[in-house]
Structures are given as C-alpha cells and as structure tokens.
Length: 385
Image 1 (spheres, rainbow, N blue to C red):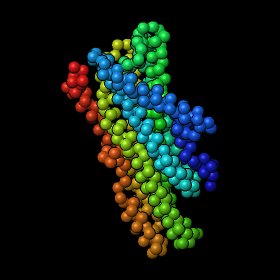
Image 2 (cartoon, one colour; image 1 turned 180 degrees about the vertical axis):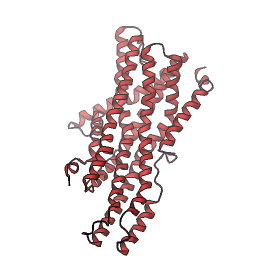
Image 3 (cartoon, rainbow, N blue to C red; image 1 turned 90 degrees about the vertical axis):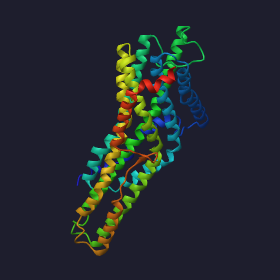
C-alpha cells in the first residue's frame, strides 16, 4: 500500500489562508491584546463602518444618472460586505467545530485510493478557492483604481468631509482612502465568499470517502463478521458526524448566502448597465467586465459545491447496497437497513431557510438580473428624480 497519500491527507490545510486573513482583520488572536483591540476598533470604524456610509451619503447627494449607477453598485456591495463580515464573526465558533469534525474524519481515510481521490478532487480545490477569489477581486479593484487615475476622478462617487477637488493632496487622500478601504473590504469579502464553497467542497469529499468505505465492507474474507459489523457502525458514526457538520455549516453560512442571493442579481444588473451605457474609457470597460465576472465567481462556487454535496448524499444509499451485505450476519443486515433509511432522507442546504444552495438558485440570480435590467428605467427613475 502506498502510504504517501495518507501522510498528506489533511483537509484542514485548506483553512490556513482563512485564518491568515482573519489575523489581518484582527479576528484571530494576537500576542499584544491591547494593541490588537485598538487595531480592530480603528479597522471597524474607518473601513467596515465608514466606507459604506461615505458611499451611501454620496449616493443620496447625486443627481447625475451615470454617477448614480456607478455609486449604487459599490454602495450595495460595501453594505452587504460589512454585514456579511459581522455575521462571520458571530459564527466563527461553529466554523471551528466544523474544522474539528473534518480533522476526525481525516483519520478515517485508511487506503491510498481514498486519500488520493480526496486530495486531487477536493483538498487542492478547496485550498485554491481563497487564492483564486482574492486574485480576481484584487484585479477588479486595481482596474477601478487605474480608471480613476486616468480619468482624474474618484474610484466611486462618494461624500468626504472635505472638498477632494480643491487640491492634489485632497484628491490623492480621498482616492487612496477608497483604494485601501475597498482592499480591506475585499479581504472581508474573500473570507465571507470562500468559507462556504471551501467547506462544502471538503464536506462533499468526505461524503464520497464514506461511500467508498461502505461499499467495500464485507469483501475481505479474512475478517470476522464481528469486524464487519464494527466497521459498519463506525461508518454510521461518520454519517452522523457529516450531518452534524452539515447543520453547523448551514447555520454558519445560511444568512450570508441569503443576502448574496438577493443582492447579486441587482449588482450584476448594475454592472452591465454601467458597462453598456456609462463607461467612457477603456479601463471602465475592463473594470465592469471584470466586475461582472467577479460577481459571478462570488456565488457560483458555493452553489456548485452545494449541488455536488446534494448529489453525494443521494449516492450514499447505493454505496451501501454495493457492499457484501448478503453474506453478513442478521445484525449487520438490520444495521444496514436502518442506515439506508437514514441516508434516504434528502439533504439540501438552505439559505435563510428558503433558498436552496444549488445551481438552480445560481441560474435564478441571472434571471433576476435580466428582469431588473429590462425594467431598470421604471425601478430607478424614482430614486433619481
């Protein structure tokens, strides 16, 4: 047996970037507590709170249609981002419990095939999710920054307690605040948007590993019937752990995804409107095209792995019938019957208790974006005049 894969199997490795970003935001433990608290207060006031407020006040003062659409998109994004960040902080304990469950399930991988499959198809993808989203978001923000410099304006129309047009110092101060503030909001967003797909990816992988373990029970003739019974009971315990992780994860990301579901369509629509009607220079077109892509990537991974998880749970009862249950003891067959009945229950993650986290909801977002786009004049005319 090749034990190289066993030494590498650690699904919690995918969370190392997550905790690194939490440390940047002051959520993780620091050595100097007083300094860390001061840092968190400053970051919360000047970025998490003030950044959405200065955009919102600027939005209420606008009369130009183009500026309104440019500001409205970022205002909604920043408000949602700050709100999601507070939800994340409230659910960190649940996320830690999910990670502990994954650590326990990692130890149950006993063959090279299990470890190789999980690492190639789940662990590496989950580890890459946070990197990919961070690069996409930072690239989009950089395009907005360059467009603002080229056009001699702010990244987004907003309110400042000083006239940013009065001097070069005022202009660069306002522009750099927006750039740094939005970068910090991006860190918020990366945390919020990767914890869901990353955890769902690992959870679906562990469900597949459980199916692989169940399917091979009973075929080793050198093992006693009692050994097969004990192995089945361990698999039932693994299933309970998976369901517990599922419930913890659902309660952790439920409201985050619920907010995203109802705001992503609006943001995609606003980005398309800005791209088609209010872009003036090349970098504007690049920015809004990349923004539409980043908004899609913001929600797609979570819905994709939500569908994948749903399918893995559906396949679990079939894996139970694949094992050699016919030649096993009566107690084994009784336990298998109970296990199958439990596994037959549909497992679908819901956002806010209403919206299913699967690909059907992802396509519903684009349908909503198209509906808003076709009715944009009627919806936004009252806000402008």
